[in-house]
Image (cartoon, rainbow, N blue to C red; front, side, top):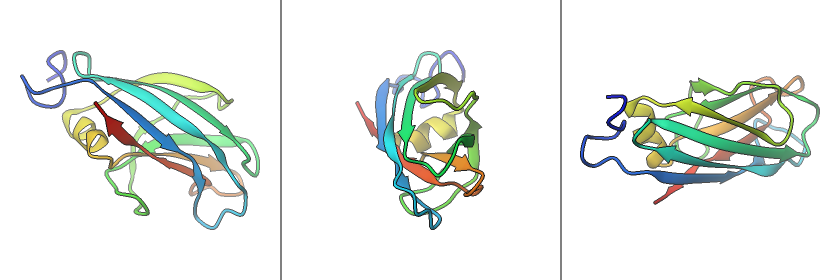
Length: 129
């Protein structure tokens, strides 16, 4: 459905997303930062900006994960390209199912480090019109 918006034809609308980082998977660091973004229903693209600090070391990988609510783990929806320096920005194209999960707040960004390969910081994304 690319080009007509990933939600449903005639009902697709742009929206913004935001999430703040917190530690996860037993990390003793105190990560800070946030993810902000804008979903364009016409192009099915999510443009994002990620800022972060306070991790145990350099980010080795970053991903959008879902669908999963707060505190639940899920597989990778989309990788986030490096280099992993803050601030980090980019754009990913979403499928219809991924866009719906994002709108429902079931997508999070995970920052992985050598000390925490399963993820050290997580930002659950909330959508606003």
